[in-house]
Amino acid sequence: MAAQFGRRLRKGAATTAVAAVAVAALSASQAPGVNDHGRQTAADALPSPEASASHGSATGNSPYYTDLPPLKSPNPSPTTGPGPGGTGTTEAGIPATVLDAYKKAEAALREAKPGCNLPWQLLAAIGRVESGQARGGRVDAGGTTIKKILGPELDGNGFALIKDTDDGAYDGNSKYDQAVGPMQFIPSTWAWAGRDGNADGKKDPNNVYDAALAAGHYLCRNDWDLSQQGDLDRAILSYNNSRDYLNLVMRWLEYYRKGTHEVPDGTGTLPGNRSDDGAGASPTPTTPGVTAPGTTTPGSPAPKPSPKPEGPQKPGGGGATTPKPPTTPPAEPPSTPPTAPPTPTDTVDHLEDAGTGKLTAMAGDAFDRRISTRAETEAGKAVAKVRVRFTIVGDTDTTFTGGESVATVATNSSGVAVAPALDAGEKTGTVTVRATVVGRALPGLDYKATVTERAADALVRTGDAALACAPGGEFADRVEVKATYKGAVADGVAATATLIKSADDPTANAKGPYFKDADGKTVRTLTGLKTDAKGLLKLPELYADDTTGTFLLRITTAGGATLTVELTVAAAETSSPSPSASPSA
Image 1 (tube, rainbow, N blue to C red):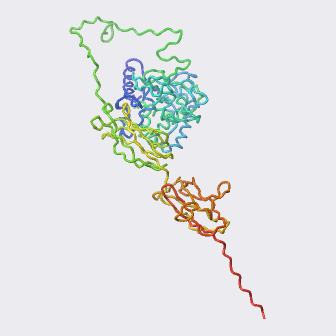
Image 2 (cartoon, rainbow, N blue to C red):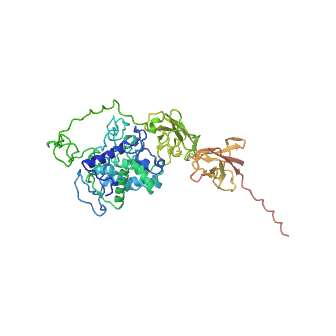
Image 3 (cartoon, rainbow, N blue to C red):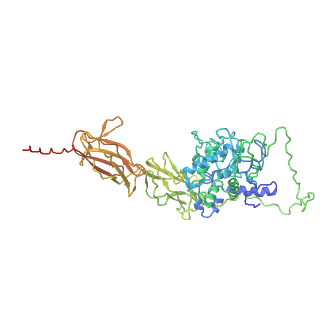
């Protein structure tokens, strides 16, 4: 079987060699908050690495299960295997609650981000590789894992170095972060990527519904279309930055696409091999009946250590030989370890604006400018291949394209990182976007963006019929107008309608035509009006009192558009009586 497809790890020399490669890959991670100083990762090996720049890694590049799918599709019938908590290499279907969570997440993303084309089978593939489908579906009725599933401490010892970012709130570790839950999110990623998938008002990484929905949104950011192989590769690599991981997830994705079945919760089989050679080990916790590697069952004898040779062995075996004393004394070890050369991230002194300009957009519109930031040395020299994280802070519904509030982009050869486009929300006011360097504790650079209320610059009536009625009557036609802004439909624009005294006096008239409020009382000013999705605004019915004459209705909108409509109240004309016929002779 091809080596690149997440091969099973074996003990002995082969294990040592493969584990060393895995450790090297994990150490090169660039997860949020990792002090990795911008080392190259597997994602950087993709064509156009800037196009695949992401938030780093959802899991902090934690270890994962490396078992390969069986040769046969799981579609025909459940396979027999170990009971609850058992381990094995045969996939016996997907636990019912876990499968339901994946399918609900797919449905939610189909509505929220239809262009992403997220298949639930991708979530199942990642869930299998990350936690063995929540450790065989050991979840309660609401989808929360019976016990927390935690990855190892990311303490830099064979893994990425991610110091605590959540005060132990998710992982119970106040010193280092650990990947958490069935989809193995690190706390710093969950802080912005977390979702409430079961509508219970909480975002819990240990709940399979919350975790599956969060994983779906994470994979669908950056306008990725997962029906395209290039975007699919980028999305998977952003979850765990390893080519072996990408290939393994693709194998499981294709396996589940051929069909699957559900099994009762808690009866799924557990994988037996992991990328860090901890066969059957964490993500923790251990399951009753399963002994974690490196431990013994109470009452069982401790494993005997392997005997160590007392001297160098002869080629091909044989006994030990007595070593000869060296002819020259060994060299003195260096007093200080060699210092690694500085990486690009190490050389960054500050961030500078790279010509962003004024950021203004109306509510609901996209900003026409994008934030550009340049990473520079102390001498002002541009630094390439540095990850810059852009974060929208404060109480706002403005987001980056795709609905995310965080985006991480690598600087190009000119040292410039360009953030994704901003989409203005409905909340008006000032929005702050903060740029920071990933892996360095440098001051951030804040950008101010302004969201203004929706506006119109033109108003026209949709009809041209004269508006008239008799004293004390009701106007036959309602006034309807259409609002536009720069020739385009202006939807959701606030408007006010007032029956004014005259063209020169915009105050409300005390007589003449009027509207009625909800209680049937006379009102001559209407506020809180808004144009609909087609830019149309239809006013309520108009009535006339006993005053005759010509009156004016003025409609104004945010943005300054104004339209004045003429209303006529006049008594009905009566025909003159015909002259009497002269009497006949």
